[in-house]
Length: 206
Image (tube, rainbow, N blue to C red; front, side):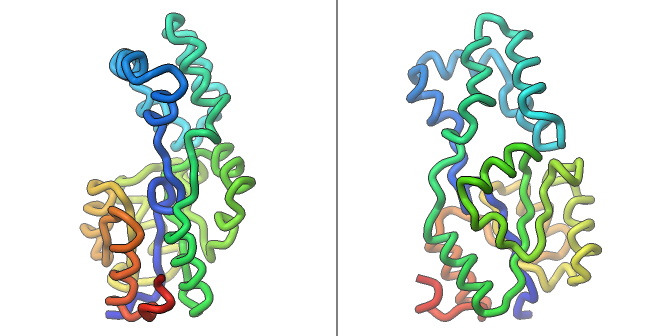
């Protein structure tokens, strides 16, 4: 079946999201590894993706680990430096789909404030036909309900949705609902998948 809509994850699909890389530069790899072993920063970020205020969550964690206070606060204070750069080929693919009249949705684990901040740096984030942002939905992938909500809200059958994400667990969650899926490992492979699906020509996918 030719997909009726294409669903994009954002982090590491349209925008690089590499907190470890940021901290390696900011405090050095050895200190970064020590901090990440002591503090579950990704679990902290899950709270943001579930809709809690990023500054409140990060600063609360910073007070729980005073030996890392300054470094943890950087997760809020320097957030835009972690979510960079845009993956230009992926952005072109999104725009090419829209130019062909293919509905394009986001389905992303993203905080409320951080999504708005990201959109000021990357205006293409305002170009989706529909946004499904975890912070507003108060649920994160791979919760089965997040996929069901997109299906019901869009009115598109699961098998008519094509979804790309860089995380295997998120892809598995969509596949379990019957979605067409692509595990993103770079824009070239995603471009080929869109061509194979009959959504873009090879020229449009460059």
